[in-house]
Image (cartoon, rainbow, N blue to C red; front, side, top):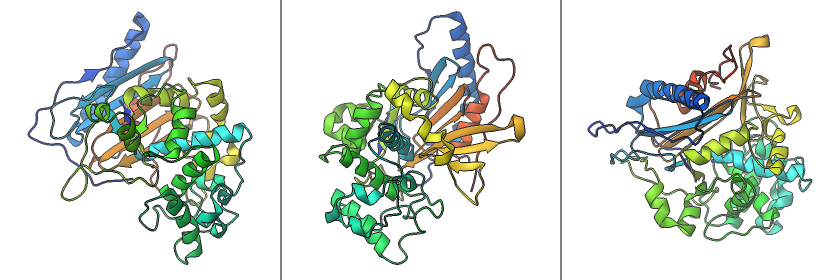
Length: 405
């Protein structure tokens, strides 16, 4: 499970009614210029307006956005339904399947460097002892990365080791009725396949399992580390390296009946905890506004290479998927807008990141609850559409929507 400072689901939550709601907390900005300050204040007003629209359905939240060269974050509410402490830009939220965009970036790095090919069979990266011969040769890395593997959403059995996890891929393929489709046949969202892809890449890159996954070590060394995302680690990564800091920084959420704070499973690789400060770095990189030269060279593979983009449903090219990222086009002709997004949820937490392709606007939402009256894609789209114009622009850009398959 990825934790981000301000790839699993939980039950819906509603805010604790009796506890008072603490005041809004803003992230201080380093840029002292008046122009930047005005832009940041306009972004704060947009954040506040969106928060007011959904406040009754939210326990705690951190919002972030980018408009042109201006970046801002703002946090609201409580770190848990049983606390009056408010979150900050350093509070850790679980972001679930948004971690798949990090796995996809690892894959894009290796492809750009010529170390792997997207049409390579997945089984070539899984040990023979784990039954890789049972995995169809036609199941490629690209199939796994675009949710066209045909594998089910979750592993068909509980998992206690990486060898067992890899082995379930072949066992599922060999068991009638387990796979949902043939490789490449159609879109079928799969945490199971993405977990196998991430661990297979880490094995290929020479990383080994320990108290936390090889995938996380690979991601930290090659993606989140170079971007300065120091607080982006999994539950197990935090527990292995700095458990006291983890407990001090993390927001809490509950899921299940009766509601409780759930520990994530080790496999598939647990999603990250992230802070708003780190998520802002991820948004900036994903929009092409920052990053190392090596990571920038990998970015076009993620959502800007037509040959790698596949439809998400009924062959409609307006709603597609790249490497992990959803690609949706709204409006028609010259007024159309293409929005890139990824949703995530994990054991009572929910999150979404969205930005205008080729534009200057992007936003994210991280919550320690699962709203009942609105989805995180709806909240994040409302947020990006509410952001002010970038300095020097006199016309609003197109609007992002929400695609429901």
